[in-house]
Length: 375
Image (cartoon, rainbow, N blue to C red; front, side, top):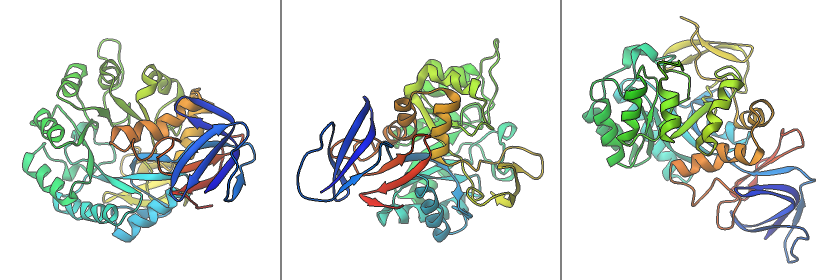
């Protein structure tokens, strides 16, 4: 048994000052505050830092120079990069592409899950999206929601497709949501031109998340409120790309009305951790300048260069979230949304020993993944 001591341990119910956590193999066995229990095994003094559960990123396309859609090896390398920044569970997001290409990429994801990696499945961000709100999605490959195409993709994923983004106003959109819900897949509303009423209808059919709230959808207007107010009224989960570019902190604070349903995501592309330059996303050229990724063709935002540690830090310092709520948005809520709360997303006995240590300024210091230190 390893005993981690001297940290401010962030749990779902609050912060344990001078807290300790015991780890046996890859599992958390106990935690508490005050004097640590005696017993055999090494003791690691964390020096008063913040100890949080490892991050669960539900929306990420690559990182460290690796695009998840290039090859299975690039997928693994990109996941490893984000693990070094505290993401201990990764849902691979795939941008719009021909159905056959998506099926091949889903097979790589399914193989990674079967191999026991920290990849937990796939998020299909397309191809069932609105051309008017496609953002950096390749419009040449968008299609109307189609039951046959979805079945082919779900079959290719071998049970690992956990989230699919849909524009519900497209012909067959609401019926596709029915199909996803019946299959046990999270239906997310995104890249949509739907109004408030249509979005609410999607939630009534079982859609339970909004893909990157505010981005790729109608804005908020006092007479035409659009998808975000519909999501807040329905109490569904809302993704937030909290890089200060995609969403202003003042707008992000609107989502705190349902802070327990907020999900921090990165939407990171391969440029993350590499730097400015020219990249490719979904077959389209992307220019990264001052850390902002935009399509070369029209300047639309094309993912981000965000990491989850920075997203959480900004949630506390810029948006004004309590660290317990911010930790839940980065770990517990996304884990619960995709059915992993019995394995990860919190510091609690019986869960995987996936932990991140932050210093007083909430800068990443160390990462523990399944009981082993990465740094």
